Amino acid sequence: MINISEVIETNRMIEKENLDVRTITLGISLLDCMSDDITALCRKIREKIVRTAGNLARTADNIAMEYGIPIVNKRISITPAAIIGSAACRTPDDYVKIALTLDKAAGDVGVNFLGGYSAIVSKGMTGSDRMLMISIPEALARTGRICSSVNVGSTRTGINMDAVRLMGDIIRQTAEATRDNDSLGCAKLVVLCNAPDDNPFMAGAFHGVTEADAVINVGVSGPGVVKSALESVRGASFEVLCETIKKTAFKITRVGQLVAQEASRRLGIPFGIIDLSLAPTPAIGDSVADILHEIGIEKAGAPGTTAALALLNDQVKKGGVMASSYVGGLSGAFIPVSEDQGMIDAAECGALTIEKLEAMTCVCSVGLDMIAIPGDTPASTISGIIADEAAIGMVNQKTTAVRIIPVIGKTVGDKVEFGGLLGHAPVMPVNRFGCEEFISREGRIPAPIHSFKN
Image 1 (cartoon, rainbow, N blue to C red):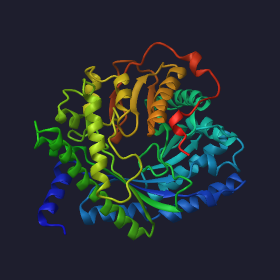
Image 2: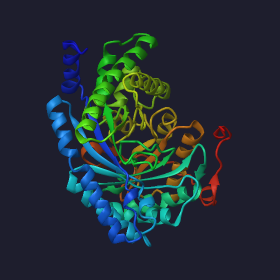
Image 3: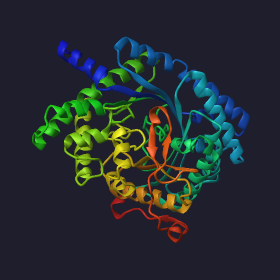
Image 4: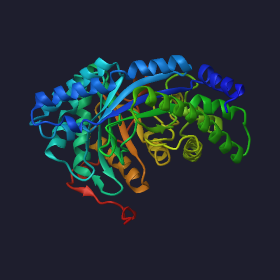
């Protein structure tokens, strides 16, 4: 039973502590749209998205109004486009036609973003995969809602270094293609290792081939709620600290569960998972870095940061899994630099470096996220950063990712304004020593010995 004190507490979380449902993401399988004719394929794609997601935005808005729970984003994820276009696409330009179709369909149904302009190349690349990857810069430059992702490695297969090398070039080309908008296209492009099939968060969302025809996934967020809860136990023991985080994560996840089940019922689409990641925003008081400060870290990046983040991530997951039978996606704590005011402050004062962020990614949800770097950073250096992050994911059997933005025309010390939830960021320095010879090797890094589980 829910009592009045719990209702009042939830209301306070929403009004004063930035609790929200960050996204309702409708996953849609497009496998039944496949055709060897590009015109027919694009027509089928648009028809299915409009038919399946036509009521998504309206339903989410109605739920938000009736329950008083902000639902920030309505999104769609699709079957990786490199699969859907494999029979019809003969050139990268054909894939751009698919991207434009997806963008038009997303606009028609009123969603904020559509993810799944993606390729899964953890062991090797087909011709279709390569064409999609080559098309990414133009596709992201000519669309407003499309997000792209490429999975280049996994614990079971190793790291496809040919794909890593190519993605360094693709990120540079995407930055150039959108240079008039501070290389914003790169903010909609992520390179992953161990990508999950059911992630509701952009830019890495896609609808895995093991998923149902359509499914509702929900991502909740509440860094401000966790920080507020920890303020009441300052100086307490680690046991009290952990219990407080777990209990708070439980409450946050229950809000997401309520919204997910209600959306599933109204849309007649099965409920998939709750992703209980703590996703920050540039708003003051909605910061993972501020939680670390409340735990006892002066600035994110100071000694002890990785340990504090590990504690936070683990307790969030422990609390969340008690609140929902179906927790999935990424689930933990995000540490995007541009989207977290505390991270921005730490980067600007020199407490936080890319190397420290890399160490933190060993224990958090994803990886190096929304980091602005100098626009003249070589493609090989970007590939080296991707390889390092993929290695962390591969060896530690977790999802890792790189969403890095070489801002053309900007250098260390400059600031970049992306707007909205993407926030703003200082341009951070990268190691000036190169890795060209390493990146130029062909083939893949083998899977670690502990990948052999059979």
